[in-house]
Image (cartoon, rainbow, N blue to C red; front, side):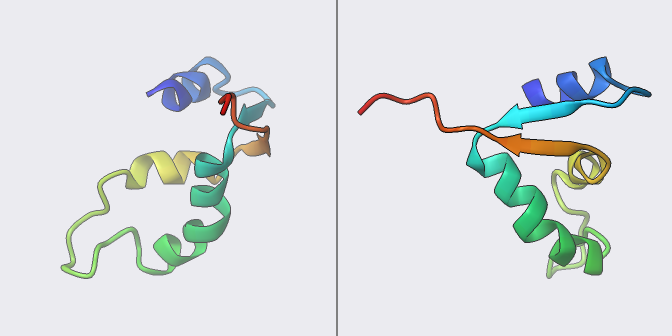
Length: 70
């Protein structure tokens, strides 16, 4: 995943991550919910991408417009 690789490249440094809405939405909309549930699903199993979300909590994400042409 490109986002995970970007996080590894800037480990220990300050950085801004520029992305389109889905990553930003995951961080800002769902992060508090996942955190409150300790990254467990309703079945009590670990959330599939919980470790990535935990990593995202530590970085600043800046939204850009999608790179699509209609």
